[in-house]
Amino acid sequence: MNIGDVASQSGLPAKTIRYYEDIGLIRPRRDSNGYRAFDATELHKLTFLARSRSLGFTIEDCRALLALYEDRGRASADVKLLAEEHLARIARKITELKVMHVTLSRLVNKCHGDDRPDCPILDDLGQPEEKPS
Amino acid sequence: MNIGDVASQSGLPAKTIRYYEDIGLIRPRRDSNGYRAFDATELHKLTFLARSRSLGFTIEDCRALLALYEDRGRASADVKLLAEEHLARIARKITELKVMHVTLSRLVNKCHGDDRPDCPILDDLGQPEEKPS
DNA sequence: ATAAAGGCTCCAGTTACTGGAAGGTCAAGA
DNA sequence: TCTTGACCTTCCAGTAACTGGAGCCTTTAT
Image 1 (cartoon, each protein chain N blue to C red):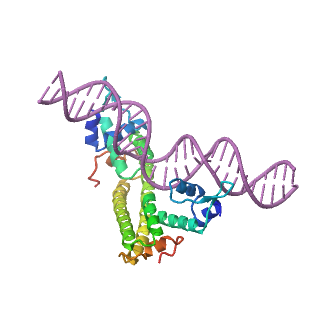
Image 2: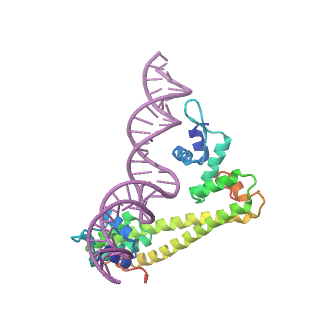
Image 3: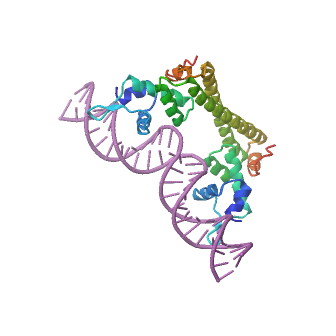
């Protein structure tokens, strides 16, 4: 399989796949013409990477997960720990964004949004943190 | 005021303030010794920037907001539009993260997390998108 | 006089790609 | 056979928003 094939099958852009090779996540062999030649195993790894990335794991997480994936004797606890840490990061990010959302909605609602120049949003932004209301 | 003063008053690291000057968000004058000299107006802008950034506006958003902030005749509708667009981005991001969170929690819960090698998390990650359950 | 604290510039690195240029290869049609 | 177009290759640069560090100068306090 050439890069275009695994790209369409894994859902990853060819550019990204080349990048993953650059950073050592995969090591496809080469055909005599210099083209990358992927086998089913590499395709599977790419699929694994696509799915992990779509769940928000960082590249370094993926590297670790891939190592665990390949280690047939790994403990599931190791994987679970990584996943739980990531879960906590996601939860923190959600909380953070919710706070932003609440604060900003409050501001937007106070703004009449017409062609007059006074604007509670800008007024608030000009104030130091805290006291959104 | 030197950079250290406005750094502590605005809450922004000095490095960031220098960076903001580099990209043209602020233009403090210089003392004869080459030190940046900030007046109350610049400090206010930095405070504005700190607050806007903490609400997740991008630098380019901030540039636009700052321009509106300085334009005494701007329409509040222009500001509101920017803020609403950002609000929508935040909402999208929250939704996205929630989906990730649900999917990953489900996986984590299925994993027994002991020293045995079989792990539903890795098994799932090896599968193409969809069908998390 | 000296040492610490604070300032300056410039360079490089971070994350995870993405775009583009310049050029080689392959399969199909005229 | 030639050419066209789709793929493939590498390499360089850019994105967002800083952050760290080196090397050097200035100010302030002891």
